[in-house]
Image 1: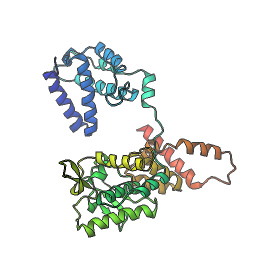
Image 2: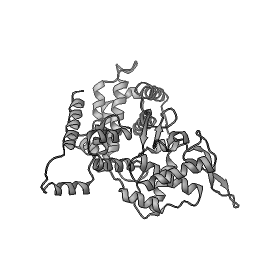
Image 3: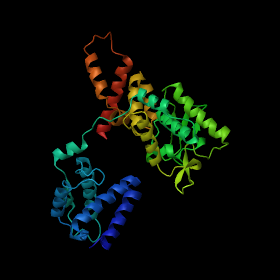
Image 4: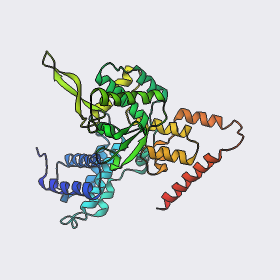
Length: 366
């Protein structure tokens, strides 16, 4: 049974290099493109790309609706179908302009990968983002044990995520030199910290409670004063594994190096919420929590702009549109309260709305 096409592999390698080096896409995006191409080749039984016909796109699109996801066993979501077909459309548009393909492929043939307008609306619909409440996170922190080095690390990890909203990839790569307890911030230096789009910025601790700050402060001091670790040592070291008396691997303290990826961090969060008897919330959900918290306590455009920058957003509009959806319960409370008489509108709130609308209009003209 045919498992690959040598000529296809060469052109795919060129395209993936183009997306990475010229278009500057992330590794995750490159993986998504490669997966889409693999799905299509499997369906066509690795037929040469030069033999592409628009009917292949139509047939593949129909078959995609019947395919099932490997993990859930359920049919692919509209969002997965949309991203897969969009990647294939861009690939064949690029391919139609390459030497050796111009006479064989039509640029417009790639349009047959389009989903129906109805399916696109379903795939791209914005849905309410799940996020824990401040009380839930503090409840989880209060129940997390701190008897061993590993337990103290885990509790400090959750605490710093609440204090900064840092992404899990950044948390995995932080070193002691990146946290400044005196200034009350972490420096997300893209030369050493794995930040989104390799942006460098500083995040000052969000005002979420002194008890949260105490947890991370005690952890840093423990690493520096008790373990005698230096600036280049990890803030959240990986777990050291060793063999027990039965020849089985078990946790054996801390390893003096950073995690290689963020998978252990998500596991720690899952175990912490399960231990508290709550539904699991991943590290990224804390960013949604912090945005909602900022919407409540910020009272001027300048304050919310600073809040937005603290999350690493260059534009406050990103905070509003990507993270600023009002929680459904909060939405109901706001609508009900609108019926109550108000003395006057806050001038700061009015200015904040005006500034947001101005940014929306500027972006629309670009």
